[in-house]
Image (cartoon, rainbow, N blue to C red; front, side):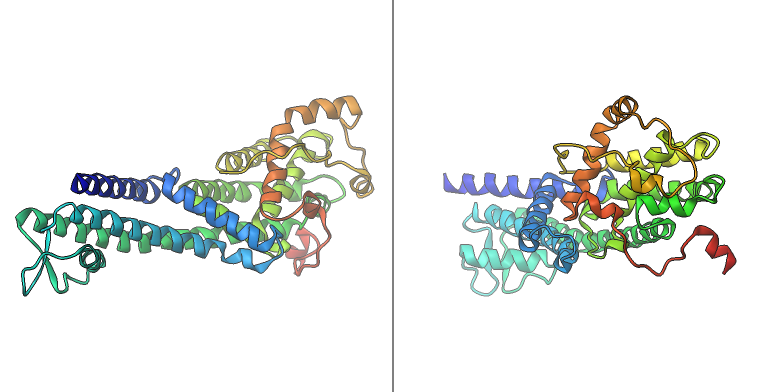
Length: 351
């Protein structure tokens, strides 16, 4: 009876690991439930250790730990599952010299040796069925190890592309207010809108990477000037102002602006395991922003803003939740920070 239980449990564990591994590595829209659970657990651990304070550098090691625990989890669970399958047959593994049946611990040792593709050590499978099974398990171990390494490479490349996107947005402005102020040439926002096509392409690509490799959501930068989430939210808030509060003669609601907004919307659809904030943040047009421009913003009456922001409620609740999940506060998207970026877009041309 115990042998059947071992066989059942071992088979279930190995099947679940293979399924989780295949979904995570080969399917471009998510992660298996084991990987998802590991990701959430490690993320919560780091939040606890850091007090969910975004400026703590310990959060920058979160991705490394997630990947390490994920790969280790696949290997350890496979190791355990295969050991249980071997344990279902007392004579499945025997000593190479004495031909005496291996104990449970010895089968555990043999399984680890086989999965790591180091060979079979001092033991060998007994009979053709177990020999074939051992060959299959050795191949499975080789696949998990090699493909896991291959999986890390595009994750690193995606992270580099993510950092490039962040720096591109930061060069336009560190805050939503600064993006608008630097993008205004005293006549209109044409200088800013010229940047939209490239931004759109990079955000769409980042979103696809985000969907294919959910672990990217846990990449953290404690430096506010280079934090991707803060910059994306600041950019989205700037788009909100341009679409709803800037007169058409100052900023035509053209295709490029709407496509940029669509790319940000697509990014938000890839977000996982983040619950909406209890309430949305205040409207972005405030007295401080008004003083920066020589024109009057439109649709700023209480009635008009209530209509606009009731439609944007869930979007902005999610934006706020994203920032808080990363250990920051909504106010951080408009905090003044010192950078080495040019003071205006046109400064790049002058230099």
